[in-house]
Amino acid sequence: QLQLVESGGGLVQPGGSLRLSCTTSRFTLDKHAIGWFRQAPGKEREGVSCVTYSGSNVFNAMSMNGRSTSSRDNTKNTIYLQMSSLKPEDTAVYYCAAVLAFGQAVCSLRPETYDYWGQGTQVTVSS
Image (cartoon, rainbow, N blue to C red):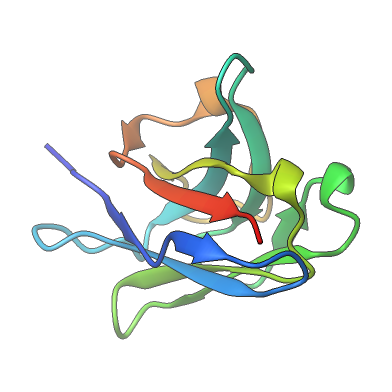
């Protein structure tokens, strides 16, 4: 079973930046598209960004207004979510998720597309 692990969350001040990481120790992710999602209390899980298996294409949610993007380093088996100009409304648990997508040039921001999920990392934006 592919188990993803997120890290890098924490408390950050409004306007600050944060980079989250996603990896797994038992499998390689170089054939998987990776999506980043977040869920705030009382709200539905929403897509933030995704990156294709090769890292060639990234798709970011329009709701983030260019403040977040994904990248990956397949040599390190790690995928990143870089966020900037953070706002209190960005406070949520952030998840990464994977789906086998070798050869595909697109990825999805729909949670139901993904088969494997991490436990999430809390991001709190507050002064």
